[in-house]
Length: 278
DNA sequence: CGAGTTTGACCTGCGC
DNA sequence: GCGCAGGTCAAACTCG
Image (cartoon, rainbow, N blue to C red; front, side, top):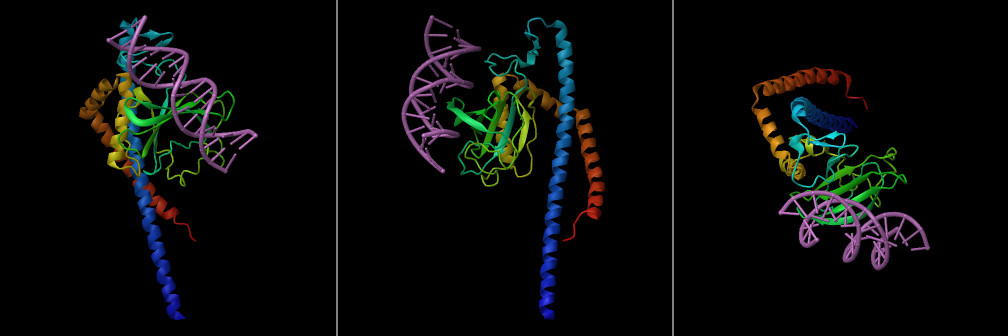
């Protein structure tokens, strides 16, 4: 009897240790994500400021770079067709979704109901591109294109066009036709989204669960997407110049340090407040 | 049988 | 004007 109680106690202790270890792992992961967010935010602010400066300086001498009321910075002008680039209400949103390698469906669960209306094999990617239209509302103009990542078939790239004229369904009832839950589908929730093309700078995709390869592949995709606009070279040049910029590196380091120290305090606090009793 | 998917044809815009 | 490529249509097909 006493031995049994002792054994039970040992098992409980082991469980607690396991949970603590898991908790620690999740916290570390969370810290990493926060740091990345901070870095991204810092990069974005800097880039945005620089872009505004460019716009200002070029606005003076510009005359032929306007389409209607929309001003197109020269760095975004291209020889190739802009098709989806110009006066759309909002820039298309690009989303990457990691799927199970064996899962060959082009279903991206995002809270809306989509109906497939076409599929096409594009020139630069052997994987077919599927075209979806939102049918939650009769006049919803939202559309999306879903295609597999060129280098990594387990990654879906969804490009959204237009805005929904309604809200999303709740998670339990929403699905792409014949879809199932993301977990059951072996799909993770939306791993990352980036503002399309022009704003899609060298965004770090190092989110939890993504290997270096995945990130590189998806960066390739973003790059291809940018190449369609022909502006990527300049963006990349600018990003690389940013990396070399001591000021930028310094502010980046400060941001990271600030985050780490801030999180250390937060973590200590959490240790006291969390670990709910069961 | 109806809803949703597939797929070949057609449309449209752009570069040459 | 022509050809190419992306996007859309709609009839045929599939599935529950």
